[in-house]
Length: 386
Image 1 (cartoon, rainbow, N blue to C red):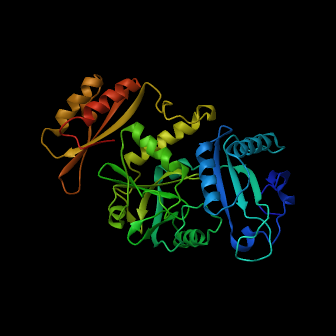
Image 2: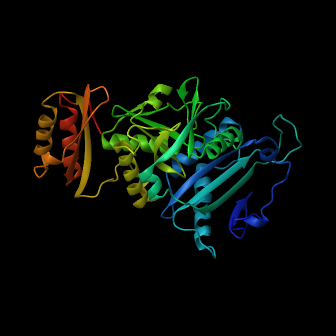
């Protein structure tokens, strides 16, 4: 029996549904002997898998990369996930509407030999467990991190069960008394032990470009779409260590952590040492999206992320100029006549060459916000709008 686990929960193993406490895999399974397999983790909100199509695409990509053929189609994976959710919710001790699907596929059981064995059947295991979402304290206070060299293998884009490098990195974080590590390879940012890392610098959201050196989380494209919808400048490119160390904001994302701010790195504050505005906006939009998530809408980016009317912060950055605040306040007033100029928040850059303004407007419609963003983006004095 496994301590602190519901051994009576029903899991899927090689075509059968059995109690977790009764599920058995051979000691000659290549996942156990070699770590020869892949896995996938799918969050479930309101009883619906989050971005299931994207998770299945990544699953198939990992299977193809290590040449495991399960014979499962995309539709069959989707049916398996939906069936497991229904069983979990109908159980004697049902999971909540927010849960986590864990799937693991190995090459199967065979005599121990490094080469691929012929004629064996892959092992397919799936379970659903409760999902403990990040707390309000984690979102409000942020996380502490340390930096480490990335010494893992060069196929990090495969969601492999061979996670020893990630395990050692996570243990380093635990022993340092922090929440996560930020790894660097040849002076460039890669990722955390179990998360993608994001950088905000001069109003631009930066992320390492997806390649073989990082595992592209499904939330990667989700956050990219949030940035596009929110007018946040986004760049996917190599990110140097000094950009991370001098970042205005840092945040991490993963299936289980969603999006969380990072406030310290190696004992030093990130930016002001508190969660920043760009991170805060991504967190709020993520919460709103998961609260209203509907799989039938396929998590469409056209779905409204804002409830109207509401107070909505807009950050504008540009080169320092004595008329900067007054000029842009007039632009805001054209679109929100009730805006109070006394509420403008002003923040100069460390060098003094740039200035940032935050306008908290009353958003009455998407059309109003789009028009305001267009007006600010097109203004000659504005470099970035967030």
